Amino acid sequence: DARVTQTPRHKVTEMGQEVTMRCQPILGHNTVFWYRQTMMQGLELLAYFRNRAPLDDSGMPKDRFSAEMPDATLATLKIQPSEPRDSAVYFCASGLLLLGVPGANVLTFGAGSRLTVL
Amino acid sequence: QKEVEQNSGPLSVPEGAIASLNCTYSDRVSQSFFWYRQYSGKSPELIMSIYSNGDKEDGRFTAQLNKASQYVSLLIRDSQPSDSATYLCAVAKTSYDKVIFGPGTSLSVIP
View 1 (cartoon, each protein chain N blue to C red):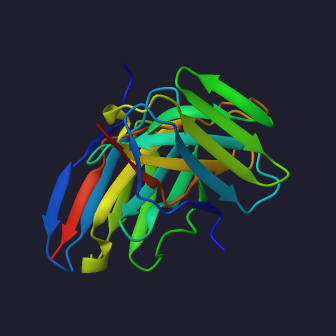
View 2: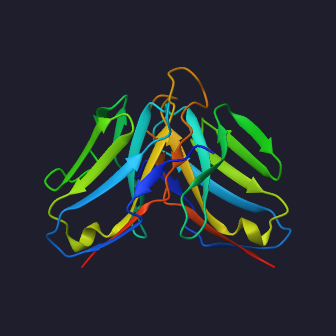
């Protein structure tokens, strides 16, 4: 089964440290999403890319978060400096989204990166 | 108003009963609708998608869509303890657009 791979699975860090999360999307998928999940806010969209180009990062705190896709096999989400309120599970999801094709935007999620900022 | 809202739950049903999960969305032009299931500590996985008004059945699951009322629902017939999970409603404007998730409804099926 094709899968989305995320690393690290767990990260504990101290406030002020830089955190980088990585995602390998499914080969052939053209769209990659970053979501953050907390009990209070649910699953929030942070940013997404199509064919490596950023389309929407309005859900991200711009001053500390950055998302990139340096190549088709790697998406990164960086937090610098990290804060306790960033503690959450960060999910990467990918899909082959096609214009005018109902059902194309089905997403496959990675296992998530659980971040704890002390 | 949030883009996607769901009944807050938690919802508890006895084994064998019908579980009914509801979702409303704010963007009238939305065309793609999904139900994902998320077990505790796991990632969301797709259960069903629906694009046209009416009902869509898949085994014990039935998704219902009413675009005029901006309402989507999921019925689970003959609920099993293994159905206990959080159910996430998701919406997209088109097949090419970002997918927005609701807050989820926690379902507990009591043996």
